[in-house]
Image (cartoon, rainbow, N blue to C red; front, side, top):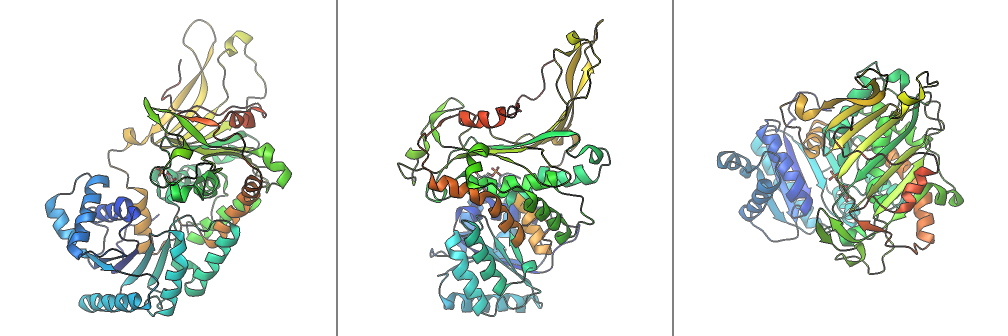
Length: 505
Ligand code: BG6
């Protein structure tokens, strides 16, 4: 959401600088910001981690990550040579006061050379258990004291449940003001997700029909082909509800359902999102079964490759009851959305990788056409493809060419690749630049995170207290367990299969 200005002088301090996130996402994003001219003239990275590495060894590791994961491809040596000197590394014990004294000295030296005070961004690219001790140490030292210049970035998962999220918010808010805390949900940085704000609030066309009078139901699917990869240890304590639904899918739902903001001020936008989350009906224990389905993947086939079941994955308990798939039906109890079901589902090891929002409109109130015209009739549908295809498709009925009046569904499509030649920035580029600029619009506010936990807590509690006797209950390479089909079929709908690029005529 940034305006077209460069950030002020910035020092980015990365806790967990040796980890996967820094290697795959953060530094490739910084490198692309550098190539596109978005980094300030005065910019430095201080990486902190447990390993003993020299600056040069560390730079080489990041170089390798950039070459593998940067959207602009392999780095050119003349660019890398300009970028590399900005990177510094320090072996550090995050719980030791000494680390923070040294860090403070290093920051002072850099600022003295620059001749000005800089923004100090503390990036928590670390497992959640470290956030609290690091925040406390930052609170004790003077490096985060200047509230106009210090910011903290916290990755998801933000807490493990409602209580731990509240606790973490309390700890962070004792040290930082809310406007200094940037809770990342990387979905909000995706180009197609940001475009939903433009689509809804820069067009007068859709707003009059964007409500319960015209919309029959909404589906949000975030399906992945990958399994838990090397993250079995983390994932087995998380599961699909915590890992995807509590954050990414609920954020997508907010963008579909929120009221128009008065301005694009961070708090204005986030107030409207919190209103949605607060209006979502919370289930009672006995209602969970009818409205939520869980699944766990078994072995199977993905794109012709045999893959193992979840319980065989490294780091996963052999009798794990963690869900790798979740589907839930939600209602938003407000004037705009009363009684319109929102179906959300997300899973790993599914048939396809696709993130898509489908808005299904109500049928016409009366069919004046003869029965034979209607054989192929389908209701209007708006499909917002978040990834991998980046497009918006609107389906409507047309007359099939010929002597007779036969109706047939057709589509109008806006596709990013056809409409624009420029590459979209990666989510992390947008988000990191926003932190540097001090724009929190695309980040989760403390009350937003807590409201999201409140929605899923009854489901988590129910699932934790009842054994999932049928696990594993879906084959890798399928669309999830049969119960997920039943969840939506009970209302007379089915999960809409999107991957086919064009509808058949
Ligand atoms: C992360 C989850 O937040 O999002 C992962 O922890 C998941 O489990 C990932 O794979 C999906 O992100 P994307 O951008 O690939 O859809």
